[in-house]
Length: 360
Ligand SMILES: Cc1cc2nc3c(=O)[nH]c(=O)nc-3n(C[C@H](O)[C@H](O)[C@H](O)COP(=O)(O)O)c2cc1C
Image 1 (cartoon, rainbow, N blue to C red):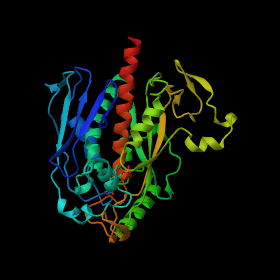
Image 2 (cartoon, helix red, strand yellow):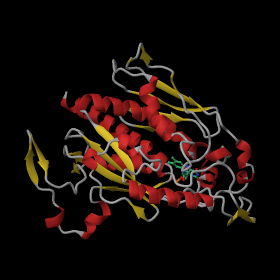
Image 3 (cartoon, rainbow, N blue to C red):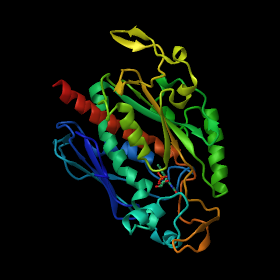
């Protein structure tokens, strides 16, 4: 099913950008887990629009309601329904765009595929769909923290051609990442990124970027070779995020330029477990977690909707100049951070349940 992911921890998302609501159903969540709305709201607040000048000014509070599956603050083991009402809809902003598919957005392909589409705000291709993912991911994240002490933490590592220098990732926390509005925990690079996004927004253009994610304290043994290898499921999850264009784990594409003698991760005793000295593997070997930090990067394109006029064609074939209206993100990566964390948590939670099942 196209809007459902997971084998044992199953998540379905629903809702369009300018419809009444968006949300998710989580089926397969273990029973008796303490869960309240505020556990979920924290990550939704990091995703929501209107957080700063760096994001779309659409004003949504994105307050979550738990509809089902929880009683007296504990999960019942039954499907958990999560709902967020849409409030600041302005379908009028999209009148012209109903006739003109935005270049590099999903208007053309949705229309071809379904023969109909929710023209306002990109319908289901909008990033509002990711609210359901972030809400469900917050539940998975909480359970992984409680079971294993796992810490999933993403940050902005590039905007356009500005790269943050290599960071000491072991000590990074979400609080540190949130200390500036671009979510890059290197203040000098963050300032350059903010200047670039501001200048790009003022020219009514957009710019791409990269989110790096580090998952610490993930137990060894997660991943289901061969088709559900851990990195295969992570890649699939990350490339399902709207606007994502690339996925790399560990050394990624840079590994193709190295020799085995440089790239291999030698083993060493770390306390009571065997670990590795280096981590070019990004914490995954043979599709299975090895107990080291899982480190991957997701590349996001510059958002397609820009105010600068673009020469293009309407659905009718007529040549037109499109200067998009509406409220849009000049760069998606600051808001993509909690989405990447959520998708990582959902993949790891599902694989954790599959491994428990295998060993039981
Ligand atoms: C947090 C976030 C915010 C986004 N905001 C916008 C936006 O304001 N304008 C836009 O054109 N695309 C935005 N996107 C990207 C589009 O949703 C995406 O490009 C579109 O659905 C087409 O899909 P594709 O790029 O994956 O092919 C955003 C993506 C994310 C993750």
